[in-house]
Image (cartoon, rainbow, N blue to C red):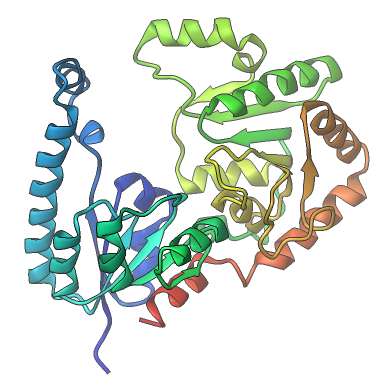
Length: 340
């Protein structure tokens, strides 16, 4: 049997977060083709000038077309048997050019709330998956036979058999959406008042700009005292989770389902608290994860679990067992690629 040759078009950020090179490598010969935005691939000053001149869209389209042509040429030489594309951002004609090379699988790992008329036929000619059921329903209403495939945890998060000493009572890892900041600031204040060891990790401000650091401290003074600013690898994040008694997961992208971090936290064997969702995937609220409705509710849930160690540990164990096999990245990729 010939070995599968899998080509994957993804942003560098998603490829890094999902550990795609290693995970896809377990299914056959794999090559990643980075496809990043204009803003991410050009100097800050250049993007600002283009924006001021009102030429952002034209610059983006020129960059997109040139980059996709480069990828097409490189992929032709690679000769893939399957092509996985995360978050499509190309014209129907460009997508057709990739379909001429091999079977194309589209995987939406961000919410889909609308589909342009000219995209329907092109997307419908591919195998299509979305990470949340709302997006699946949206695609199906447009006549696209989409299926549900959540973003599973990659192998960096698999729980270690070695016990780890807890360093923090509660931690948060993520990006600084305003809705998250509005929850983290009072939580940090409550942690100070109650003597909890609280820490937040993520790219909360651009450290190279001194004024942004000062602005952040002025707006979010309690949170700033408990913040480690920066970006972190999957391995570093997994280590944070394993050293935490409670991990907080705050959603912020408009979906009512659970995000990939839900599975990553549980895969590490940590206890998880999340904001209320409309869809919990395979998880049972109150058994696998704790759920809160507002900030006062969150503070009380944290306090209760920190004072009830046996119940906290039991919930962590329940959640880990629930997703350990069902939501690994390998299982998700096998669903997407049909065993490759």
